[in-house]
Amino acid sequence: MQKQKNKERGITLIALVVTIIVLIILAGVSIAMLVGENGIITQAQRAAQETEEAQVEEQRQLAMLEASVHLEEYEYTDSNGEKVNIPAQCAISKVEGENTLENGLVIIDVNGNEWVWIEVPKTEEVYKTTGLNVTSFTDDEYTKIYEDLENYTSIYRDSDNKGALTGEDEWYEGCGLESDEYDELKKKMLKSIYKEGGFYIGRYEVGIGEENIVRNNKDTTTEHPINETPVIQKNKVVYNWITISQAQELSQRLSSALNSENRTISLMFGIQRDLVLKYIETQEKYTKDGTNTLIGQELIKIDSIKWGNYSDATFDITNTNAKYSEDDGLNYKTILKTILSERYSKPTAHILLTTGATERNSVMGIYDLAGNVSEWTLEKIIKSDYPSNSRGRQFW
Image (tube, rainbow, N blue to C red; front, side, top):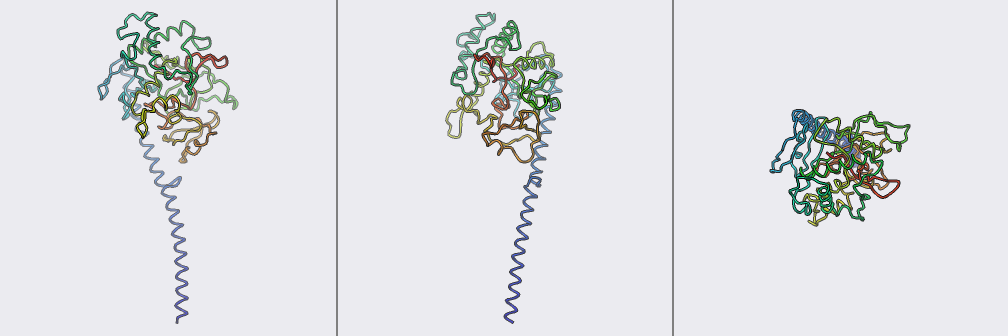
C-alpha cells in the first residue's frame, strides 16, 4: 500500500507542475491582451486619446466659425485681466488652457491657421531711449525702437549663441523682397510691436497636406515648386527644401488667403526671433528647474535640446494622428503604438515629424520652435553660401 501512495503523490506533483506552467502561459497571454501592442488597456488609452483629439478638433472648428463673424479688430480680456487686440477674421481658441496670456494665447483665423501672441512689454525698461509717447514714427524714431528692442534681447544676439548664426536686419538681394519693400515691412513691424505691445507668431511650422508633396524622383534636396497656399495647422507635413525667397512668397500667399487689409503675414525679422526667446525667458515655468535654479537663458540660448526636436532628443509622440519621415520628408509613416522614444535616443537618428506631433516640443503653445526643420528669417548674415538665417517663422 505504501508504494501505491508514493506513486499517487508523484503523479500529483507532475500535474501540479503542468498546472503551474499552464497558468504562467495563460498569465502571459492575459498580460499581452491587457497591455500589449493591441491589448485592451492600450486600445482603451488610444481610444481615449482619439476622443480627446476629436473634441479639440470640434472646438477648433467652432473657433473658425466664430472668426468669420469678426469683421474688424477687437479687444480681448482674458480671465486674469490681461488685454490684447485680436485681428479681424480671428477668434480665441476654445481649447482649455489656450485662452490666457500666461499659458500662451492662441487665436485661430477663418482659414484654420493658428497663431500665438508674443508679448513685448511697452515699458520704460524696454524702451529706454524711445520712451512711451511716440506718435510721429519718423526714421529716427524707428531707429530708436529697433535699438531698444535689440538691447532688450541682447543676450540672444551674442556671438556665442550656439543655436544659430546671428545676423543683421538689413536688406540683401535674394531675400524675396525689393529694398523699398523690405524697409517698409520692417517699419510696419516695428510700429506694430510698439503700438500693440507684441505680435503673433505661427503656432506650427508651415505645412501642407501629404498629398501635395512633390517627390522630385526621390531627390529630397531639390527645391519644392510653389504650387499651393500652405497652412499653419496641426498634423501637416512640413514645407521643406525651399529658398528664402520662396518662403517669403509662401508667407505672402498666407496673407492673401486671409484677405486682411490691416495685417501682414511675413517671415520674421531677426529681432522678432529674439523677442520670442525673450518672451519665453520671462515666463516663470521656463526659468526654474527642480532645484529652483534660474536656467531660463541657458535652456533657451544654449540647451534647447531639452525642449526641442533634435536628432539626439528623447520623447514620446502624444498625437495619435502624427506621422514621421526617415528620408527628409520624402515619405511619411504612421506612428504606431510603439513610441519613437527609443529611436530618438540614438544621436545618429534623424526623423522629421508632422506639425504638433508631441507636447514635449511645445513652449507657450508654440510647437517645434527649436528643431525639426530649420526656418528662414529675413536676417542677413555674413556668409557667401548661406546669406540668410534659418531660425525664424511666420509672424503676423
